[in-house]
Length: 161
Image (cartoon, rainbow, N blue to C red; front, top):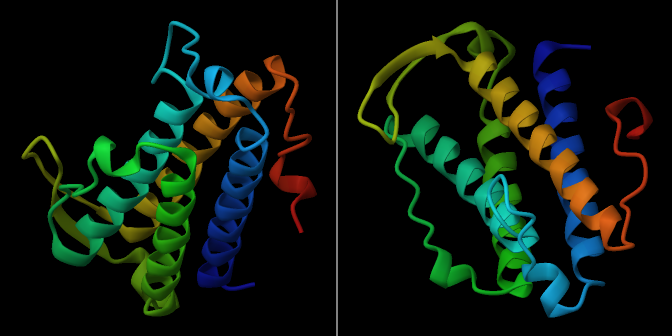
């Protein structure tokens, strides 16, 4: 398997797991969906928005050289708008990944992060960061959903097809 294929598989897993979280969240009542555990990024809604904004911000950075997410919380006020946003972001990421060659993954990327800091690192490292960032928050979402009776089940990568 090529390095590009591995990265495409990891991103497919990322989107698949996100879709599972969205499906579980859709079965909650509004109070459960908005309930904050008192730590982390807040409610299930807030955490889903954080994931979307992070995915979009890093993709924008890779495409433009500057990480500045244009997504605003008020534009994603409910689960339905987040579902649309994730669908659009998944398509945008797929287009980005389609344009990468195996050799590009080792190339350094130069960009400015949202704090204004200049960063230089290999493309594969940023892509891997996004998958691992997503997994951290998927695990948090899984716990929050499970506590409300909506477990997404086993989300380990090993069991993803």
